[in-house]
Length: 223
Image (cartoon, rainbow, N blue to C red; front, top):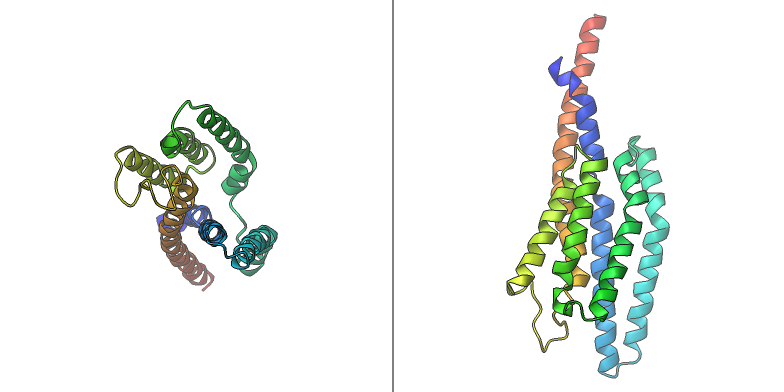
């Protein structure tokens, strides 16, 4: 009976740990960043054919992803009967506006010289991590995604403060200090998504085990 009572809990954990859209979004963002960087590089090298092609592909990829996002969710619901968790819907509804507002404010502060460009990630961590932690606490209490993402983002910000190699871009290259801002969120989001996806497989296994146990119990009671 104790294991049967776990069915709703494991179902909720599975729904809230389903991070395929997050993984896809992170991959799309990283791919777009690579395309834009390659396009700028080709333009600076005088290759005026490949540069616009890469930009067009980048725009097409973003448009395709936006169009197919809701279609993917609808197909997944039709296939499995599991809709997007209510917590994800609430986060998508309420989180973008304060996040955009904080980004705009931090960009204005950077442009006015309040802090140097290479500290853009540490400064952004002050509001990104807080928003992720708040969203997890407010709307997804049985999930750990927001806490993990905030931890990874904050760790990268600290690494930049201490100028850790690889995680901190150096002067003189194509990517300069401060450009980490374009990769911090998608890379940490990708890692978070992969870890949560592995956990969702575990939750699904526990859910199926409990469901099979319930079926066996029902058959035994019927007999």
